[in-house]
Amino acid sequence: MSSSAEHVPGSMRDFADVRELAAADMRDVDALIRQRLSSDVVLINQIADHIIAGGGKRLRPMLHVLAAGAAGYTGEQHIKLAAVIEFIHTSTLLHDDVVDESDLRRGRKTANALWGNAASVLVGDFLYSRSFQLMVELDDMRIMRILADTTNTIAEGEVLQLLNIGNADVNEAAYLAVIERKTAVLFAAATELGGLLGGLPTDQVAALRRYGMELGYAFQIADDLLDYVSDAGTLGKNIGDDLAEGKPTLPLIYALETADAKQVQSLRHAIEHGGLDSLDHIIAAIRDSGALERTRERAVAHAKAACEALASLPASTHRDALVALADYSVQRTS
Image (cartoon, rainbow, N blue to C red; front, top):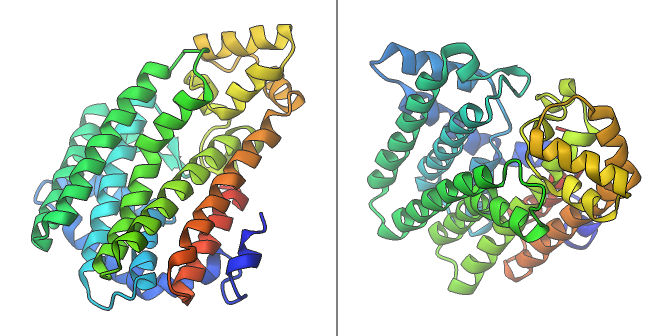
């Protein structure tokens, strides 16, 4: 996409530049995460160490510290809030992997594959409760309300997605409703809370929330696209996992709208019954239908909307970084 050409004056060229800008804050966030993951229960420490070693981009806490920077915040509460956001996100991943019966994430064995479903669910619960302990330490009802509402909405999204599995009649609106609840609301909370900490006017706080919401849509749509265009070594999960689980993501939804009758029959069967018996044929049908291009265009549109939401914020390097992240969300390969 070309949104960065309008908003970024060149200092934020790519994701590496963004990470460098956030590096000092993120080191503090990582240190706090390690400190607060510690427990007297050995199994919790083992799974926590596995999660930390798994790395990841820590995009959501990074979003928060960048939004706080864009809001002119100079205190230290953003470090604790970033850790809260990462704990919430990680707990949902642990639960997701159990529900999806996944055995691979970021190219490594999942916690449930190594320690079993029960341990993964319970440690996910530990992370949820630890995040609320940190929240209470901040002693700000506005923050607690936003994060409490966000975690509840995420739980709704999980259930909504579960109801959609195996349903070949899921349309784009239903798909986007899941994305909003499962993914976009945490992005939105991360950026909104940055504006709140910085004491921005109400309209600018709302603009940061809109940015986060649109970025969340762009990120997840692009992620669902990667399930059909990337490879396991790059993506860090098995290609076709969404299809195997019967998840009707946007590439499949678009393909069902334009594929020929025979391909539609194959696509519906794949969604309704899962499995990867005809993965090559399914991917070919999706590509032939133009669904991949439409999906990419939809992701880019949301990324552009995210950039436009930032227009009311004061110009700064941190705002430029947020725009660069929107570009990255739809250009990444993993």
